[in-house]
Image: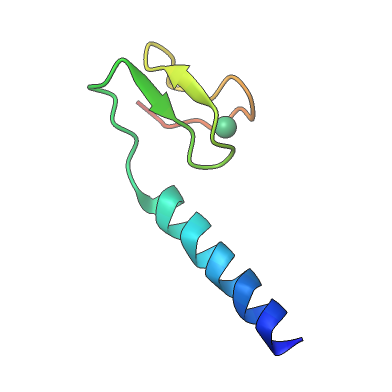
Length: 55
Ligand SMILES: [Zn+2]
């Protein structure tokens, strides 16, 4: 169980790190840190999960 728990915690850390990384709106496309969807930066909102990047 301990190994499994460590794996889960590492996964959460990776997700949190990705979520903390600002989306590069200078690029033509950005990757949503929440769901991983790639979307054009003409939209400030992820078309898949609806995460709003504020713009
Ligand atoms: Zn998303």
